[in-house]
Amino acid sequence: MLSSCHRYPEPIHSTSHIRMMDDTLINLNRKVIQLERQDIDDYISRHGWRMQTTSTGLRYFIYRNGSGQRARKGEIAVISYTLNLLDGTIVEKSDSTKPKEFLIGHGGVESGLEEGILLMRKGDAAKFIIPSHLAFGLIGDQERIPERSALVYDIHLIDLREFKPAR
Image (cartoon, rainbow, N blue to C red; front, side, top):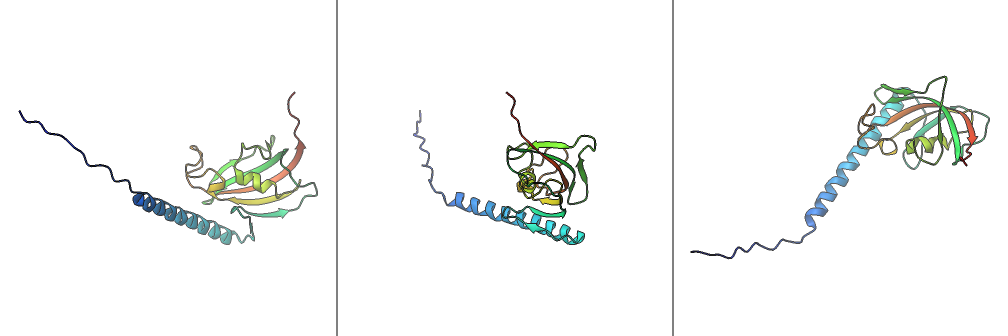
């Protein structure tokens, strides 16, 4: 009868392969962001828009000025809008008989949409281009918005109302 002692080599505890993988993912992410930024720049150029860019990457221009107050967190924004992808596909339109409402600063909409609304006054109309990281990110919405999609909003801030919590 033969018997042997099976000794397995000790695992090597090195982090160099993890650092290489991290660097690869970081570089890949930078490239994806750069390509999306170029797609947005091309879209803006084709339309001849003069847009401003926020520190987060939201592009916007207000093409009709209202006369109301500036939007603030904690208010209810009442908007009408058309939402497109950069390829021109219409994703969604607000219902003309019932505009969309949301509480500013409390989620429930894309962070880029909230950021853009805070740049507007009641009555303003604007165009927003929201990069994917401020919209639905890597996976899209699993329905109409594909993965890594920038969104184009044509938006009108109809009203701002005070939020009154339920008692």
